Length: 397
Image 1 (cartoon, rainbow, N blue to C red):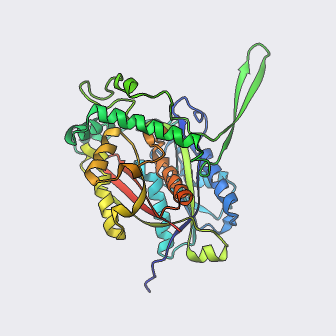
Image 2 (cartoon, helix red, strand yellow):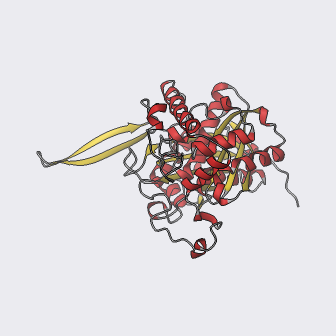
Image 3 (cartoon, one colour):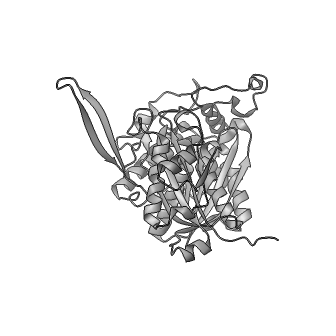
């Protein structure tokens, strides 16, 4: 018997603040603990009985070490959920968090579940880019087009060359990311989406011979810098190619953080007295040549629009991950995105990019922004290492 496609609603969305890696505020905090914190807050915000959660799907780009061994299941148990709540960890690199939400929504849309947890978590302080033990297939040395043969920085340089994105444009874009992020923090734009995280740091006091405890509550993203200037950015040396234009200043920051959402069917909304915040309309992934992986969203976005029947002009808010200023600008120009609707509160260059968590974090930003400003459609999109792009559509209800 065929099932009727039903709507999947986001009834809660939250995230941690984002810390800088590897020496930032979450440098000694495990990603499964950050994720468990988000899960607990989702339950608190909605009042649902967690025994009704059918499954949890969590994204992580480097699922090893401290965030290995099916981190999703570990976090669910750390959060105090019943043993009956199953969980799995998935990996689609930078789109892992948003892909997890898309998969969870599909379970509901197909009628296979009524209540789903989804999100992403990443500690780049504990597990660095490429993982703790990179072991590439030797084929990359004979065929440079196989997956990860190109470093991310070099792919950004190739995009800058092909789409003619100047160094000046990249640095001005990066500066504006910081300006928007600082203004958003000052205006309290992120307050509703962030679940403050209480942290105790312990260190020895040699003089007294005692252990000192430094207790803090972390509720503000650590990356944005108010002292950023275009002039200062222009002085930075190229990071990946001696004659290049991609620098540390116009690239995303390495970061730590987590984000999660709770999704429900119409039946669950009705029976559990939940308040829908948004509807997950749909998502698409598209592949591109690995050497220009950053351009991936320009293929995923039109694919998503065709699938959902929504026009680009109808999308009020776009969270386009700023892996690099070069690729973000190339995608915006090639796809005809309205700059005023892209990353209104700043992007990953200022706010950080904790890899597999970013999609879930930026989804939380969209859900709360649509509610706060009474807008209808939001889109989350990002490029993906090895040559892919992701785009997901959200509608306020």
